[in-house]
Structure formats: C-alpha cells, structure tokens
Length: 346
Image 1 (cartoon, helix red, strand yellow):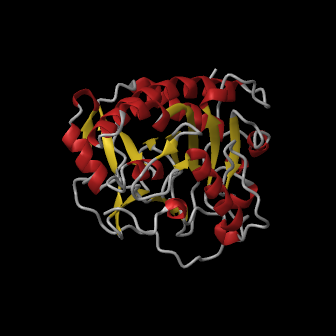
Image 2 (cartoon, helix red, strand yellow):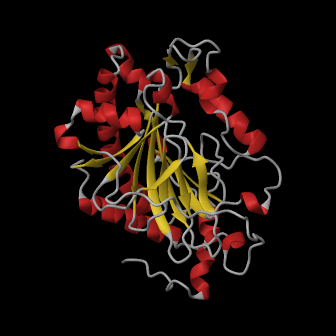
Image 3 (spheres, rainbow, N blue to C red):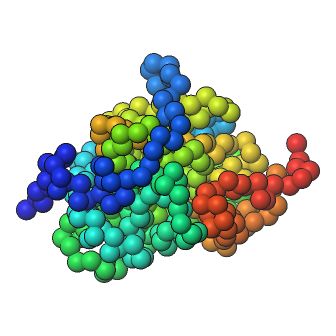
C-alpha cells in the first residue's frame, strides 16, 4: 500500500523537515545573497551526448569547454526514474525523527543542512554552525556496496527505497564505465589504468530534497565534485546551475528523460587540466521542493593519478585533504590546488 503523506502546507507535513528549517522556526535572516541567475540563452546550451551513438569528438569538446553535458538514450527505463523519484518523496516525507535515526547508518546515512560529510556519510563536526551556514536541504548518503546491510530503522518505505536505489546504481555503473572509456581514449590514457582510474566499487549516491525557502538563499553553494564523474537526475523543479568559463552562470533546465553528467576533480587531474571540473550550485525555491539524485564515482582508493600538472597522488590522499578542509572551514576551498605543481609542464 502506498504511504499517504500529509498534504503539503499543512502543519503536520512539516514534521518531515529538520526542526531548524521548518516555517517560522529558523533564525536565518536576510543573507544579502542574490540567487537569481544570469539569463541563459534559449534553448538550453548544455551539450548533448547520445549514449546509443557516442561521438568521441563531441564528448571531447564538451569535456574541454564545459565540463558537463546531457546524456540522452541512456537506457535507464523511464519507469525506474519515476519510481526512484516517487520512493525518494516517500522517504523524505517520513517524520524527521525516523530519518534522523539513520544519521550514523553506513548504508544510508541521513544528513541535513550541510554538504560536509565523512566518507561514510556522517556530518563532519567542526563546532557550532552559524545559522547563515545552514543549507536548505536534507539528504541520504548511500554507499552502494553496503546497501545489502540491514538498516538501523526497519521501515517498509526505506526498504523499498533501498531496492530501487540498488537497481538504479547498477545502471549508473554501466553508464559511467562506458563514458569514462570514451574519455580515456580521447586522452590517450594507458588502458591498464582504466579499472583503477574509475572504480565502481567506490561509488555512492546522494539523494537531496531542497526545501521550500522563503528567503533568497543558496540550497548548495558553488563547488566542484571530488569525483571522476557525477551523474545527476532531478525532478521538474529548476534551480541547478553550472558555471561556463570563470563567471557565466547558466540554468540547467530540467528536461525529462535526460541525465546530466558532471566532470569532477579527479578527471581534471588525469587529463592534465584539458578537461574541466565544473563549478555548480543550487538555488532554493520559494514555492516548491526539489529532489535530485547524484551518482558519484571515484578512482580506486590506492590508484596513483599521474599528471604533468600535479604531484602524483591517490584518491585516498585527495580525500584526506578534502576532509581536512571540511573539518577546518566546513567547505572544500582548495581541492586540486593542494597537489598542483609549482612549475607544471605547459
């Protein structure tokens, strides 16, 4: 039987929100931020890649000039995508206390208000968080190789959600492996590096619900991903933006039946900076919630990334430095800059 959630905008509905983010119960004032995007051309200019007819040159151009592209004809069934979003809505509609009980769960850790997480999905502790630093979202961090474990909270809604995530994750592994192979061939990477440079066993997912917010704030600040690749699917509520060049922010329209593939820091290093790890952000919506699902895949933990622009480093090295930044300042401010060579090859 489908769980019946309270109608939105009723007091009981907001029992699912973290207490600090419920209407009339938060201390956040005007943060003097302007989340309105720079108007983007119409139609949406994001490059499009057809997975059933992969064009190597088109991928190369998108990676070098954008760091992001849409994926069509990807083979993920529409029914599965609809089910994924529906199960996510059900899970987020559970009472806050039920979700919060999962905050230390390895397989499906609940978090809210901050993207600063440990590798197992727990919130990075760095002392009291100023209200202005609280982000208007909640989420589940899912380690795909741990999904078979029993959750700390026995709930049929969460269990059904877990089954859908497992099926969706297998599709994402297929897509990421195929796309990365095309990228690696464009970059003339050693074929022996394929399996270590992209390791689906490291993959995780984050499912976000960006909450309705009456103030002009960012749901998620501008950042790059610490991944090789990120694959994103979202509902029909806009708000996701990418940066073209240094400061041209563009709205990514929520086009049905497409996925958005984002390049991360690790592939930028592998490519000697030929490919771009794209900055992106999410603005909060005053009237609607927004749900998105990100699939994040990395290199093998001990794979040594060789580059003419960076000192040799492993994903373990990179992750450790990112965690240091998160603990110190709550954000990943430096990333690849920690490993940049002072006199890199041209």
